[in-house]
Length: 379
Image (cartoon, rainbow, N blue to C red; front, top):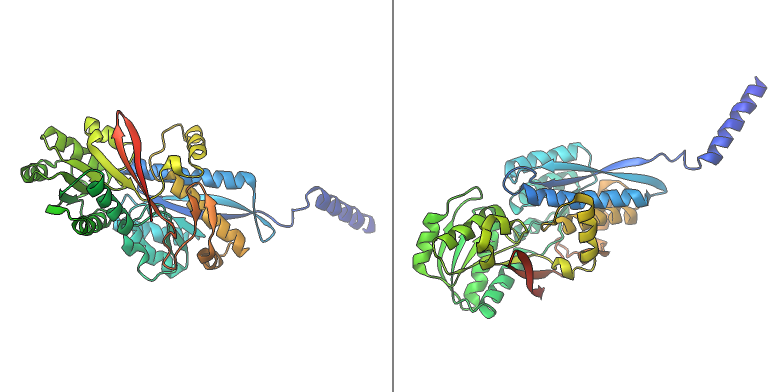
């Protein structure tokens, strides 16, 4: 019996030498990602998910240690279809899945209702794309974003239209979503302040395909430009139909329109679009060129808009985890206000409300099938 005990002790000692971390088994923690993966803007949602997935793969490959324990991250991807009701259901699922943080949602109209679910669970939510100012003005300590807001984007677009394009009259159309309306409202205020005349304001919806009635009315008003508040899935066809009906006005749009796919959706009319992104232009981001190469090598498709932002959002959650020395969501949340993270999009730190300390707005046009940077406005 004594010999058997000694043999067993020797085996355990040998195992401890061979596997020094055997007593500290890996912990797997989930990070949620939410965006539309079905519907008209699924390409934007998948682009964002790819960015988050790339970050998680890199972090796992390099090894993440929190509190002396090896931590493996697992992406928990969810589809909210851009629908507010579905967004709250998905948010509750992620809470039930015990995620430690969420990258999402992509749309303002889904981020705002979902944010209450995450607040009740004390889980940090970092939106990669929601620009409506209302998202971070609810008094929740769980809401963050890594893009500028429409209170910055609208004025930057209006200022560029007035000063660089010489726009004096503008018609405004929005898609009746929280994002589209929010951008249109902020643009309208800034346009009037800049001395522009707003000749009309119309609304459509985010599933519309026929804009001829609105475009025909606007043609009669003969504005210098039309601001379209919405996403590329409707903004592209809107610009295309405006061109077909002989409208001479420039089409202005926000980050929802400012994608790679809008060139396919608008056809030759893309050359008439001037749009903004609520962040630094990819080619101006500190890690932009390297990120593009990694993204295209991994996913074999062109980057759209939001992948760099979701990528950095994952790293920011991992950074908070390391600084908190814990995978407890409440402790990760407590570490978020002191974030000082240098990533692809630049240096990220947050205001007390969860907005970026130093935002930037980039203005683009499309020429000959290419997206061209026109200007960068630092906020």
